[in-house]
Image (tube, one colour):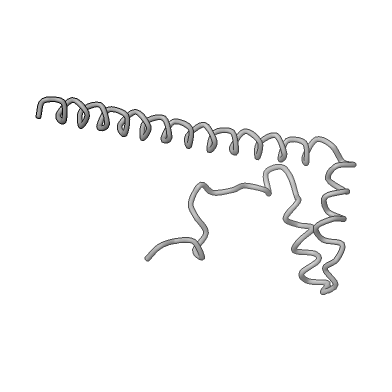
Length: 94
């Protein structure tokens, strides 16, 4: 019977260690995603050729003039461009 308890304790320890490892890996992935997003935005705002290429790729196929202008405006940099850390209303759980 004592062997059973040892096995249970070892299993519980492995589960706890696996959970902690998985959580830290998830945070690393999220942190990496934030860094990559910041690098992309920095490149977008500092390199006019890159910005023009992205606008052409993303907005070029949009034929409606209003939607096209809105798409182009989404690439603006500087004080006009600011993002919230809050989820958009479409992703908010009620």
